[in-house]
Amino acid sequence: MGKASRDKRDIYYRKAKEEGWRARSAFKLLQIDEEFNIFEGVKRVVDLCAAPGSWSQVLSRKLYLPSKQSPVSKDGELPLIVAIDLQPMAPIEGVIQVQGDITNARTAEVVIRHFDGCKADLVVCDGAPDVTGLHDMDEFVQSQLILAGLTIVTHILRPGGKFIAKIFRGKDTSLLYCQLKLFFPVVTFAKPKSSRNSSIEAFAVCENYSPPGGFNPKDLHRLLEMVGSPSGGDDLDCSSGWLEGPNKVYIPFLACGDLSGYDSDRSYPLPKVVDGTYQSLDPVQPPIAPPYKRALEMKKASSHGIRDLEKLSLDA
Ligand code: SAM
Image (cartoon, rainbow, N blue to C red; front, side):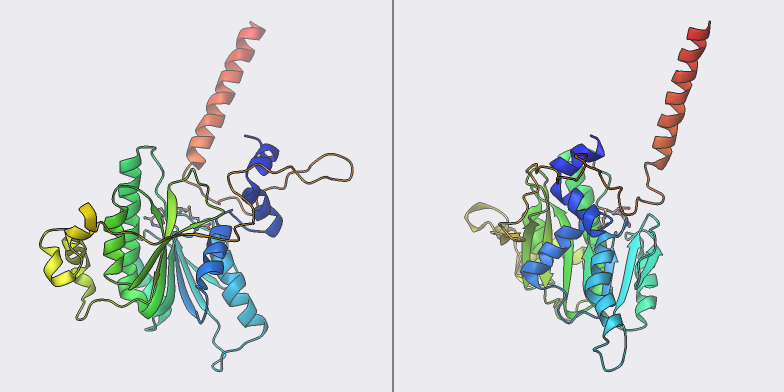
């Protein structure tokens, strides 16, 4: 699909370039905020799986830049934003970048060091593995990323804080909901308008972090494994009965974003231009070292190779 054709078919892709966002995902976070007011009172935030950086841009524009322009806090402290990804990211004003794997315990330690003993008000995680197309497999790997995010949350989020995480809807969605409910009294699964209906992605919006009394982050996995197991009911109030039969848990699911706004599944005509030709904008900031870079180089090299062979045979 060419750029102009994608501009037509994907209104959020076009709008992202027009508004200076690195990726269309920016609109997902903005629409979640429209519904849940997630930035209210936030001074410290962690952006997990942040590259190429459109969510970090939203955090910078919503939290850091306004504070810098007109400081409101008495201590004069600017909001602290720490972004982590496996991939390197081009700089964003007010965002500290850490290149690392969120499933690695040491990554949490690096983030904690940046917070200098203070806790975060908000943790967001838009992590996604490379999708294989095998639905169960993709859902499983995605849930592992959320659990890695939750591990970091248990070390770094202040009581009362919020956690927003991308999920893939599937057969284990209820289990994940129950696991998140152990730590957050309010959990809503949200589908922003900019997320296509055809995509299985949604976002868990978890509010008011309240870990169980006496909780030790070291016990997280043991605790999560007990959810939905027959022994889990007594001490956790989250038994297998929640997950099946007539007692099946019903997950609050909310569409968010202006419902009369742009529909991500529709094509829109391209804007008219003076001389009649539409000029597609380049992406704001292409990834600096994407995982597919080597594949592109190999593809390019092999197509050159084929062209050279064709040239040789024509010359012969
Ligand atoms: N929120 C980003 C934005 O708005 O630009 C887009 C995130 S993109 C959908 C998913 C990201 O998850 C990728 O950049 C990928 O490198 C990252 N990721 C996947 N697994 C990860 C891991 N184990 N640790 C850190 N980042 C990871």
